Length: 119
Length: 108
Image (cartoon, rainbow over all chains, first blue to last red; front, side):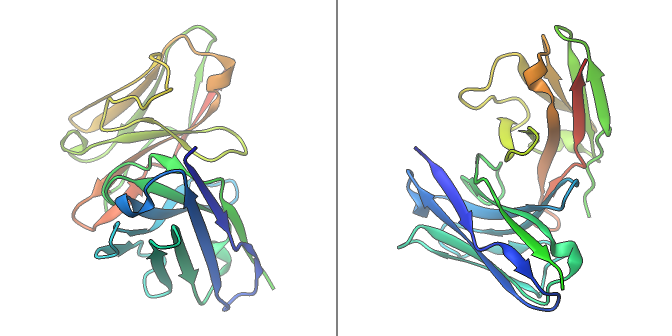
């Protein structure tokens, strides 16, 4: 069974950093581009970042550029997102998702991990 | 930046057909993907590349894309179709993925 499982969420103070990680299983992780998509409470989906299968191409949304770092470890089947200088509008569920290439559709999603930015 | 516009809500009677639109400049030249998100759940891809249904998606769900508008059509609507639906494209000018604002489908 193809699965994506996120972890690392929690309550974080404004101005601090958070690292969320996604572990993949059941498929050849090295063959796929990976993304982070977030959803603020009661709001729509917002794409955050993408990384190609070999990490040669990386893209960020303007809302996180300069504060976010996406990375992957193909030996461990994991992709991570580090977000620094957190603001209240960074709060939400962070989903990990998979695409054949980074410009394609999100064909598999994890269940998400909740990040709450609060003092 | 590229903008996708969806109606906030659509209602449909059980057994009837629901249409959800997604508007954007020259959208017909892009590949449009659609996601269904039921309450409390992660999104699920229901249509990719304008009109392709992934495995397991019923034939009642279909997509089209032409001009400035893409459309998701749900035929013979059921209570289980109640969800939020999002369209999405890749913007090759900014190298960003872009989502529409989402449409809440109510089956009543």
